[in-house]
Image 1 (cartoon, rainbow, N blue to C red):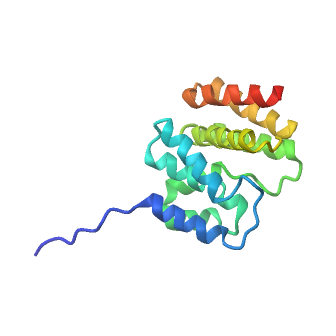
Image 2 (image 1 turned 90 degrees about the vertical axis):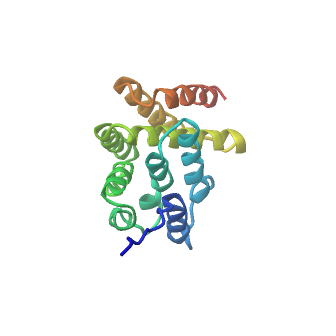
Length: 175
């Protein structure tokens, strides 16, 4: 009796299908949604991140932006991916922006790499989109991005990505 060989899972394709379904009927801001998710995964791929990190990059906003939950991510992609997506998800019960972002940075710092890598790649993708489209980035968002960058630098994480983020922040802060 020969063993049945299962085709390897194409997690990237599964994540894209998951995102298409999750974002169906959901209104998102310009520069968000599936195009943003793909841009984050592309930044990670170009920086040499592994497939799992790229997958987290694809899924990082799905819980914040859609009706999907961390449990949905866990069901489809496993505990490790769900834990990382959870660490990248804001606590919507915290009403004040600065407090919510501070709590998010604490979760990201506690999770370490590769969550920090995804957080930095997210900011790179967002700032590249803003630069390309001319959409302004608020001062409070830039402050959050700088604080996230400082967190990564202090921890010695995501160095190559930090080197990409620093000039983008400088460019948009001066523009």
